[in-house]
Length: 312
Ligand code: ATP
Ligand code: MG
Image (cartoon, rainbow, N blue to C red; front, side):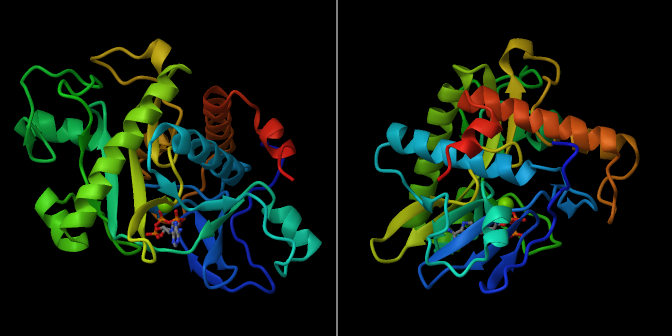
């Protein structure tokens, strides 16, 4: 993978771009569907880095697709946005564009995304650990004394929503009451219920494969026709989750991770945290690519090449 080029921007001649996120470019397919396309861009601390990680967009897409298939079996009543991994033959794409998109795009339902980030934490680390050591709480919820770094929450996973800040701004933690005021009582309750159900199903599935899902972030949208809350965006990827190697995990110290923590640690230790236009050294790019591939294989039981070969 390191020998190939990172794809950091995408334009399609005949499909309008709906939006450019930190990692994804969304293209309108028609009024009800879009191409949800992952580039190889990587962001850390809310800043997009100057260079990408070759093949990362393929991994994010294939991992999300795997999870949608697993979760629709495991979580009764769950609806998600994935329609297909291959753009329809009728889509106005050149053969070159189809080749570029192959494996990194999902045909998805085009929905109105709720403006909150649905975060679930099973283990105490990161900002939750900082809050706990300072105040004895996590997301304002009192926790028992004596918890160790990276230990599971004693009363089970907790839901800690945040705002979905516009580009350039930082997401802020919100209380359940604030979540209700942003999305309404009915949808806030359903988002919380689905978040915890999806996290629990995914954490059990991953643990059977030697991976701890320490925490993760979901996004949901509303299907206005049926009034159903739908799981959208990427799911349970190394960009949206902390994944730890269960064999090496122990409470009291940071476990080796298969996610962006490696990049965050590099940026922090080199004094580059939050700076614009940072170019990652080739060794950090290669190591990150290897971690993403490794977790893909562990979770899905397939290599990336096998997953790509299975596409139509
Ligand atoms: P931001 O949108 O703030 O830039 P981000 O950097 O995480 O967030 P990306 O992951 O790069 O964004 O892009 C994905 C975008 O697509 C997110 O804004 C997400 O809310 C949106 N999205 C996900 N699923 C759907 C869907 N089914 N319909 C419409 N928009 C969606
Ligand atoms: Mg995103």
